[in-house]
Image (tube, rainbow, N blue to C red; front, top):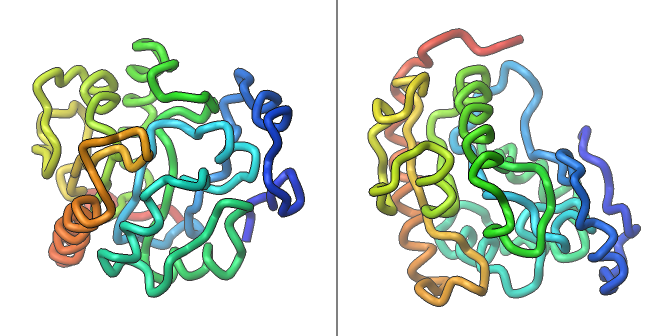
Length: 219
């Protein structure tokens, strides 16, 4: 695997550790992606890493985040992944074997997603279109409707399945969904409601599998 281990060596971050990751580093978190030429069933796109996530170099790592519990309850993983101290190589392999990849719109770590500027999100939307065009996953799910609206200049967008034609350059063969932000700060959702949305995304990704990519995968 090409991901770096936790910078903290498996220990819990301290407040000083977290503060040290509040920088302008655009690559504060490694992606979970397969080798070139391997098509993902589902590419999950977070908004940007939180400080805890960056400190342990693991996606959605902060304790209390409902991402991993809801993914497991939806049946996307066969066990509940605990990434709070880092993502193990075994869990990374499990995700990739399931055809699941994880990245972010913005790589800069912040305490809250609302610290990102409109300009950052707009630029991130353009980069995501470019990456999706190269990676050609069957389906993309972006976790956060407010950031999605800003990144793609779609102020009226709602949660759920999207029309890819609304986004300039988006490959027509790649399905697009927006799911809720899974942070514990999102009081509108719980593990069960998040899991229901992930089940719908996964069913769509499976259905999308029968459609050929709009361009060959890179080798």
